[in-house]
Picture (cartoon, rainbow, N blue to C red):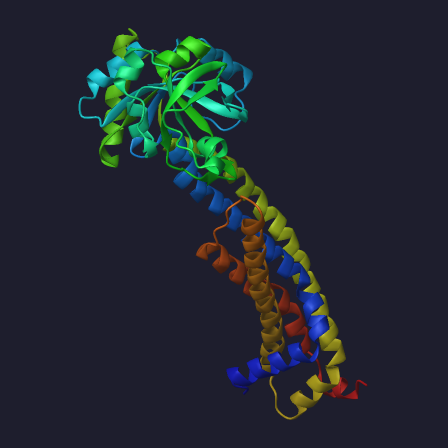
Length: 416
């Protein structure tokens, strides 16, 4: 009886003796496994990226928002938009109601909402186009964890007196003043055609998916309304001291607003109270559709690869008929022959799985390097890929192995 080491050694010898044929035999499995690993890496990377960066940048950490329209990636359908458009606007009174209900909150801010206006920012002969212009109350800077590289932030006095002052995002300040080495604070720029004094420059927030989070101008919300009028949706942003307090804060804020808006028990709320998890959950629902498509595509490739392996193994049985007959004549049992050919099929498919994992990892790394799409290799996708490889060898290697084991030794030895 052959030892397992001998069986494996002979299988390796057969695979390496026909390198080119082995490679083309495995091509279907390599491509399918590489596709699985790469796509899962990109999707998992995007999920983590949305949770760690985009969601936090939109809502803030340990924070939630009261909004007229819910957070959503993509478009509303007609019916949903009609229902949302009938909601009343979020106002300063709503912010006051939330603030009164949450005395333990770290910050409660009112910010201008959608549509966020964009403006050229002009200093002398220098122009930076398409800057996002936000109207805020001071607490918004705490909700979003803004730090200031220069100067200070918007204050309560700025809001109360509607002062024409502004805070520039890092990119805006760098483009206007960085090359000249000038001090931005105290300079006047034009925003929406009106002069405003720069009182601060925010520290850089960085980029998310290639989109800078530093191309903005912050104005006191009262001055912003003078320039642009009231937005269709203002937003109340609330930051709690601890993440564990967010759920309780959301419940109390919702109750306070329902009372303030005189909503009856059982009546649907005409506002949305949401955390960053709402954005993350919506994104994961989208990626779940991709995860439902991937198995079908990978399955087709795996089946095709398995059929190729089975055909190659059958051809190998035909080519090695005389060898099989000699081995049986000197004492090899049918089980030994079956183990030998099954080991070759499993080795081939497992090798295809390993090469596919390496190929998927290289492709995902390349995508992350040349594009803003992140990629994150997960252990479970690698494990599934390896199991698929070995499983194909077992599933499609059984028939050729049994066919080899059933050969009559005398007939086989006569085969030229």
